[in-house]
View 1 (cartoon, rainbow, N blue to C red):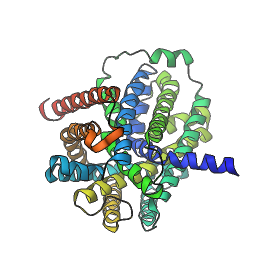
View 2 (cartoon, rainbow, N blue to C red):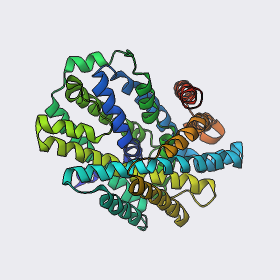
View 3 (cartoon, helix red, strand yellow):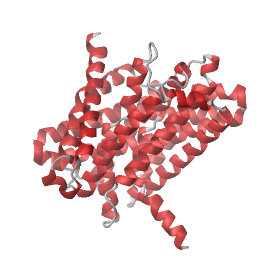
View 4 (cartoon, helix red, strand yellow):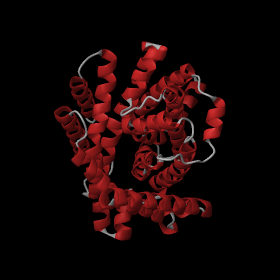
Length: 403
């Protein structure tokens, strides 16, 4: 019994990191990762290592801020830089999450509709309703933690089983760890790094850690939770890329969405294989459907001074608003409208470097962080990561507004 309790406590301790991994690994990220493998084989496996390294660095900063700072991320930032900075970040993140929420709803609908030969809209409405229903539970964080751990477990099982059937080339995987940039791959590389190295996810890590410490005040600073959670994100990304490299690349099959991978598996390995991949897509979509909404609602609520925890009713209301927006757009349009994509991209271009610098600034401030302030190594890694996301933002600005 003691061993079971110890394992249960250890898994629960990983909650914040796993929640972050689950919300980052959504259907859009699965599509990008599948395309990397389908179009370039194993060649770009190395970019997963780069993205995960910097994501671990920033998620660790977020976890330590949540554990050590005298208030939430935005409340600390408000004292440091003023109310305008906090409102800009909270409102901006709310708009971005609301804009992208439809993609999560559509991914969920497709995963269930394709595997059951039904229409997606019913599934979208059903699971959006279930997600909103979860908000009414008093212990919403505990439910969220258990749900995300279960969904990540489902994804790991589904993708690992698919990988076993795909029989990838070990030499191809090893050679893919040597950095190279195939012609025409720059856009996909940038899209992958931007989606995997999620500054918003790192900021949210601070809120998750803060919420966990309300329930368990004597818990650790969350660094191990963040590291393990992001490593799991890296494993899932690598498995999807390798599966696509083994299955899609040899046949030169192009994918436009994550469901394309499942359809390509069926002729080769039967309905069981495609069903497994749809199961993984469902896990990715449902976890992002819930996680993405909680990010937008929590940050907006904190920016407005309505509360910074899942127990605050106004925060739950904002989370529900994001879910409703996503479901409405998904049902009415059946896809993410171009205008919403451009809006989200535009906000992200200007906001992400600002948020990243704010996170780094707080983590480097000894008066706020005390003993948990960034070490020299952590600060250097942080500045390198900030330079990377700033360069990505400049490139995206050029592509969106100048080119």
